[in-house]
Length: 208
Image 1 (cartoon, one colour):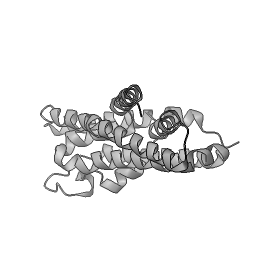
Image 2 (tube, rainbow, N blue to C red):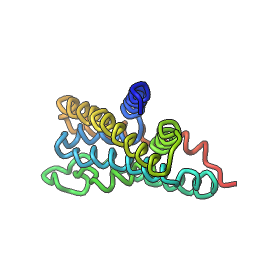
Image 3 (tube, rainbow, N blue to C red):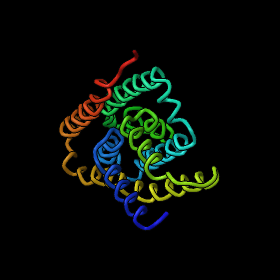
Image 4 (cartoon, rainbow, N blue to C red):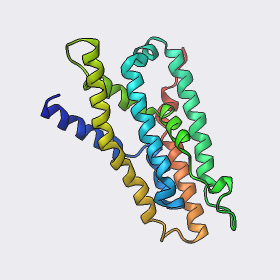
């Protein structure tokens, strides 16, 4: 992979990683509610889930979904249901008084975060673009797999610190949200933004 392509991929990875989306809204909320250390599994899960998605799509899942639009529509509906559940979880995410380890007071775990990426329309779109645009080239199957793995490693090197900025930003907001009422309002606003981020998916769903 030449230098120009590496720079192009790094720029694409930064822009797509740092811009708003369901995962980044969750990171901002988790950082504000639980701090960076407790949000670290969420950060790692979101990054790993996306990079693993790029690998699977690059190995053949993308064309399958394009060939079977009904499967893609079912995936989008599942996405909506999961994101709505997460929005409700965010709405309730402030720890209960005297019980910081309550169900409402725990950040998302690693596997939950990784699953989110598989139900995240932004992640699907970016993963498809990455596999199509940055792995093209001649050579054998082993050469293609090597390029795919290199793309994943380069994207991950940019993605992980980029999405971490959202959790760090949430931590910076903690002083402003030390009042329970402010925190509840912040969580409610993040829940609404998360649901609104699904509007393009709702408008795009078609099973016929």
